[in-house]
Image 1 (cartoon, one colour):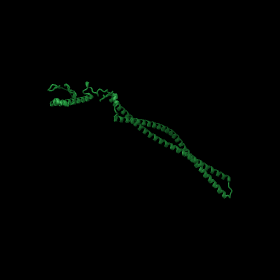
Image 2 (cartoon, one colour):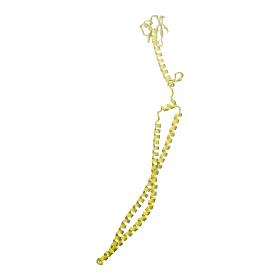
Image 3 (cartoon, one colour):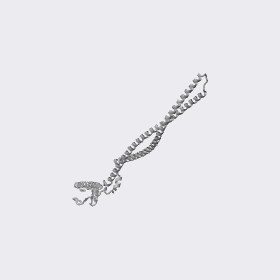
Image 4 (spheres, helix red, strand yellow):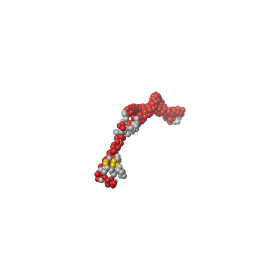
Length: 292
């Protein structure tokens, strides 16, 4: 409160920079208090005092604004709020399980998942291929046993056919000799007929012709039997070759089956290793404390 030299004016500075005049009949002014009435009553000294008071009021107002802003930031960050807890610190925290679920999966986790799926698919393919090979090998082994059994029978038949072919060849040779003998006898009869002026033994000539025809027919039959027997012997040899081909095929399939079994063991080990690694990482994430 300030008193003027005449004692008639009572001026007071309010908290918001208002200048109040409480003299009899004087008006109350806010702001910078620049009315013509005050200038006329107070003079130069009072104007200077009013300017100094206005400057002080403005500085106080700016400082209060700065303090309010500073307190607001500190209160948000939790520095100057009552109890040392700011707005962020008062927010509820999620439990660790929910916090973990809100995390985005890392690239390594996604890669391991894709590798795990690929390994699982590789295992299924290898197992399916091994089953198919096992069925094929079993079928071919049964066929080989049948062919071996048939081959043994064929070998026995082949030996029989060989002996039979030899016998047929002997019979055919004998039949050819009979033909030749009958032809020679017939020629002798014809020659004797010319020498005796047409008188011949017709009975002997007809008998020679019958022997020749029978011997020729026998030679034809024996030749056909020889060809049939040789064809059966060839089938026996083909059966033996078929057995050898099947045995080589089964051997190749067994090698392929062994390769697939090694691949299956490798895929199984890789799958177990990935599962162990994923379980270890999951356990490590669950036990470690959550950090903001």
